[in-house]
Image (cartoon, rainbow, N blue to C red; front, side, top):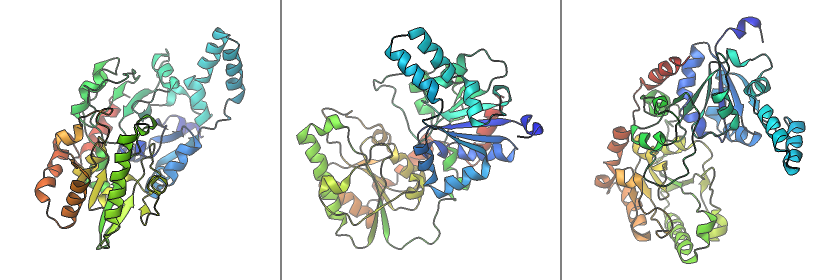
Length: 400
């Protein structure tokens, strides 16, 4: 790195899980790139990097704006990691803690990304909220002059219900951006200082100048149904009569869709809870798996069918696509209320026949009165104005 480049502003983007972590921040990063900031991407693992690599748009985007990409390797710091393991096994707690502190030194983290970088010439460390990496906590508390500010931002659009009992782990940040003001009470229980919650709420990835990157101009004449269903936890699969009804709904849905010759059915797997449809339904599916971003899929679909309590329904509302949620089969064990249906983002099917009936109604344009309100709800709870990327960019600069 040339010496004159050290005087420039530098940003580290820490990606820990995958593609969703790039959606909200990308329109903002474009502003930083145009303002001559050096943007360094740190990927938690090769697996995480490969998830992004599968998406052509975002892969090309980060390569256009990046200064450098660092992919964490399991063999990095192998000596220290091995030593810590043995110290833990032999109960040398003090020595083990010393090794842990050294492993999570932010100076060490920076040098892994680029040997010429220092903590003092980095303006911001940006990462998805709920990143509990100890390195971030250590940076927050370390007494370092001119250290980078920690900026936490959203990934998928969500509204968090603060009334639901959860493990409220604290987060360590200097600034927290939220997609919706509706989620503030939830996050107030997780931050150390409520003043770090920034008042620029919204979803910059849904402003018109950005979503045009994903629209297909010459779309097929057939209706496209996007299935975005997530598997249930293993403990619920043990409740045979409930899980059996869940499988029955899936089988009924696929049997119905196979009778439709005028539709294209795409399956978008949940990144963390994919369903092995072929195995559980014992049938060969005649549908395609959708590998691009979820936004990409929704924009170009005519219907979205998603799971109970899934934030995926927000995409449909914001992009003007009717959204139907399958019914909840685990009423005794799951949360009975669905915040997204209560707020009007989605319609929940009453049973298998109602699910098929509502899909059929959308295909025939007969359910407009049910779904029209969905398209108004998104704008009520989320700011998607074209000025939002500029507004958030300027807000971040205030922390410099």
